[in-house]
Amino acid sequence: MMDFFLTFRQFLTPIKLCKLLILRFRWALLQEDDEHRLIRIRTFVVIRHWLTHYWTYDFTTSRTLRYVLSTFLTQLQSNPVILASPRDDRIVKNLRNVLKRQRKFYQQWVDPLQQQQQEQDEKGKLPSRKDSAIGISSCRNSLHLHHQDNSAHSSTPVPSLSSWTTKVKRSLKRTVSIRQSQSTATAAQPPTLYSTVNNASSCRCHLTDSSLSTASSVSLNNSQHQEPCMMHPSFARPPPALHTTSRFFRASNASTTTLSHYKSIILKYRSEVIAQQFCLIERAMLQNVTWDELVDLRWRKRSAQRKSFVIEMTTLDDDVPVGVDQMIGFFNMTCQWVASEIVRSQQLDTRVKVIEKFLRIALKCYHHRNYSTLMQILLGLQSPAVSRLERTWQKVDHCQMELFNQLKEMAKPFRNWKNVRDCMTKATEEVAESFAVESVLTKSLKEFDNTHGCIPFLGLYLSDLVFVAELPTFIGSALPDDDDQEEEQVLQNDDKDLCERLSHHLVNYNKFRITASVVKHVLAFQVLSRAYSFKVHPTLHTHLRSIRSLDNADIRKASFLCEE
Image (cartoon, rainbow, N blue to C red; front, side, top):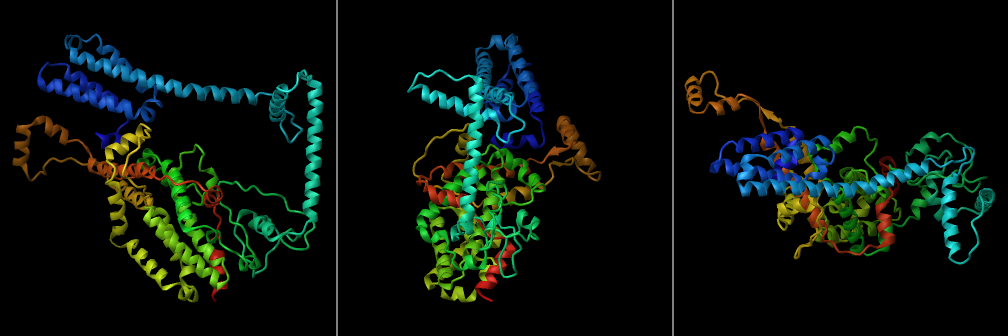
């Protein structure tokens, strides 16, 4: 039953399923024998399970579905068979109570959202100045709060509208003058190394062949701009500021001088702390993955419209249901970041330390069963731009190389990633699939003992879902061929109803059973990931969530600068 409700929407609509269950229950009311009583009980269990676990997925989005089911339950109250059987009467009352409870919970959940939307609409209707770059509504709210704070200390009356408008004008003029003075002070200061790195993406001058630049939209559109900028000593004015919170990642430009003095942030923290922060980041993204997103393969439908899989991690807390996209984007970005951190370290000794540090972080991730970050680091270390650095790898410690070889052996892709799959399958055995599905669907936060956290290599399960989706949803008739006339005649004589059912197309339920099995594995990992109890390191956690890297072309250039 669990597999069916996870996947039935692929071949059946919720309204049609509801009508079929109603027909089944009505058929069971025609006779009063053991078989029909058993069917009534089973149908009751199915409807109750559907209402309890999938209300938010099917019923909240369909008013027709709620109406059909509630009307049916109301009509059953006057059915003679139900009235004559106390057990059946309890079944109907139980279903009605479940429906009322879910509907009440839904109304309590929706009403605050509707109230919030109405408040936002009312705020949008407030008058605003069309000739001003700053909306008066926001200033009005802030001034209102300011007056509330001051009212606690004095009893000064609230000023009139004209005086309030005068204060707003003065505030705007004061803000503009302050910003102009700040811009003048910034232009008068020489650029430091820190400001050069942070403002590299704002450089609009034409870079030379020896410099490394990233193919962002700004640098492409302004590659022919010849005016001086603050990236060079002879700049005359600061460049316009760029938005740094765009959804898609824009890598910063880096000059050759900057690369030669670059020191990776991973050298400033312990390997254990870095591995723990990666576990927390991966856990947060894994919790955003929904089972219906996996069943519907929504990430594949969105991938055709996306220009890049590298997503800005500052959008991690958004309400957009793109959990799989976030994990794919972060996986690709981290692989590229690992290679970037190595090739950006131009000094040989520093580059060796960075490689050895990544190997120790990978080992910590393996101990914490964070197979996602483990694969990201290993793939980054095995990228062509890093693998070609022969002199660098010769300097790596022998013990570290032995560790690297063992990790590569465990994560090799042979036999469909058998070693990694075995490790992850062993982890899922610690949590019952029924408990995992129940916990995720009901949003239960029940704790369980004697369990360690685990983050899966989600790409394996996504590839399984894509492969299974290629199987046919329906299969043809299962009747015998024309050559087997005798077998067909025997079948028709034995069971005409079965023969009629087999003459129609049948649902390939084996396909959906495999799909449900993969989805339940991912839900089990969601429950397992809650077992991590690491503390958040604010500075490091924020940096790792918004990591920056060079693009592929710049990584290759930097690699050749390291070793020609």
